[in-house]
Image 1 (tube, rainbow, N blue to C red):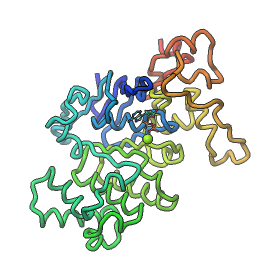
Image 2 (cartoon, rainbow, N blue to C red; image 1 turned 30 degrees about the horizontal axis):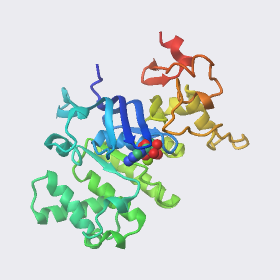
Image 3 (cartoon, helix red, strand yellow; image 1 turned 120 degrees about the vertical axis):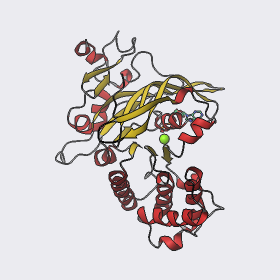
Image 4 (tube, helix red, strand yellow; image 1 turned 90 degrees about the vertical axis):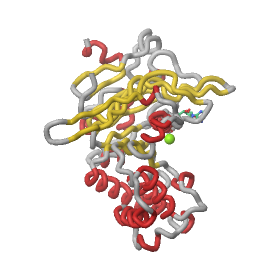
Length: 343
Ligand SMILES: Nc1ncnc2c1ncn2[C@@H]1O[C@H](COP(=O)(O)OP(=O)(O)O)[C@@H](O)[C@H]1O
Ligand SMILES: [Mg+2]
């Protein structure tokens, strides 16, 4: 039974691309949960399926990709007062990607900010037009009111001179400002869940720090839950309440952020942590993770991490896929080392 305070639960999701070269198992058994009003970080090396997982939730996986297994359960809040907290369970995997139901969820209850804002902003419309479109799509307001709200949204995302910027075109803005516009669009419909896919990766570090600050503040003000996707563990430490670690299409560990940093269980999570600099360990040598990420067409049998794992047990890890098991409240791991403890 799902817990009441969850806004989203992804269970054993599988999304494959059927290409001429073969089947890419982009997401291959990913399970994670997002608590209402909290930030879940999804972290993993490039190519491990983070973006495809996000596309799957919004049902915007491009062909030849398809969801071939698992469930995505969205808990829509129907009533919330001090005494009761009623929510309705919707299985997004059963909905038609372009059907009425999914379209009304996408962009209004669940919205998204992408890595490169220039690809999601339309170059021929002003930023004001684009924020107004998002506002009028889901709220019944006239143009004047929508424009007023668009300016308010720009102000809320820390845009200087919002009354002027509202009439600018995307190319007139810097990368950081464009990302602020994207965040304004994504938040203009007061979503229950915002999915941010590497929103600061294309920005310089100063702008990145500003956008992270902004997102954290807006998150506190609005109480929107966020799925924050990044390859950067430093960003995870700053932004997130919970963390899901992905490797080759699978979530290999999920826990609260302190457990991930101070008590990581999966050998991959441990290796990731050894590969980044940490305060207080200035003199320790950083260790790159040995080996390379395998080709997505040829994922190894058994645990996908075994060829790079220092704890791999021959005959077991290279043969059987470990199950994803809870080892403590809110802490799950997919590794044969923890099979005993789970029983
Ligand atoms: N449209 C597509 N067609 C074919 N393969 C794809 C497509 N999109 C992603 N993939 C593959 O799916 C895997 C996961 O990609 P992605 O989710 O973008 O990784 P990440 O966001 O973690 O860097 C990769 O091997 C990638 O090449
Ligand atoms: Mg990506």
